Amino acid sequence: MPVHTIVETVKAEVHMTLFPKDFLWGGAIAANQVEGSYALEGKGLSTSDMLPSGILSPHQTRQERTPGIKDVAIDFYNRYPEDIALFNEMGFNCLRLSIAWTRIFPNGDEESPNEAGLAYYDRIFDELATHNIQPFVTLSHYEMPYALVENYGGWADRQLIGFFERYVSTVFERYKGSRDDSENIVR
Image (tube, rainbow, N blue to C red; front, side):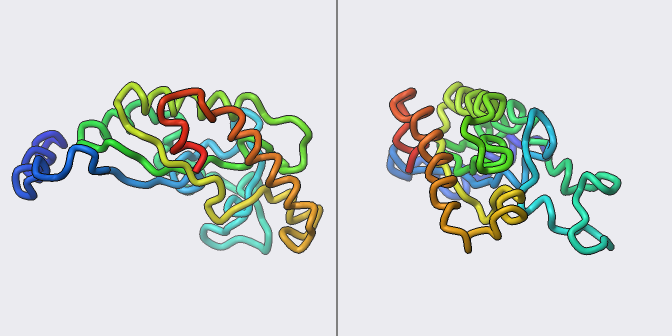
């Protein structure tokens, strides 16, 4: 059954038209779970990229083995226009998503952000706006650049506070006030 038919059936069954006009109807995704393309355009390895899939030796990275389903995920990185159009077809007016720290600062401790990573999220926010879907952004979804674990011991080193602050400030500066929904991007 086509998605639009399912959506119309669900709308009729739950009387979605009875919800207030400002009711937020949507879903949630996390960059590390949906994007795939974990090594494209300068993205660094994250702690979730180090999680094993199948039988691996300790700390074997995805780059050291045959790519698996977690490496591709749903390929949101390449297919986000189609996916966002489907969200719109399902009647979504909001989407909670995360920004991968490693797309913006691949190793976490760089002085300057990876412009290709920022441009990727620019395109996502523009596509969401095209479909009148408000983004609600999570800046840390249970992962960090793996280089920060290797080089600093993770959050045990207080220097990470400054690195995280640089990442957050970069995102805030990039998106605050740049679009009508910017207050949701920087929450």
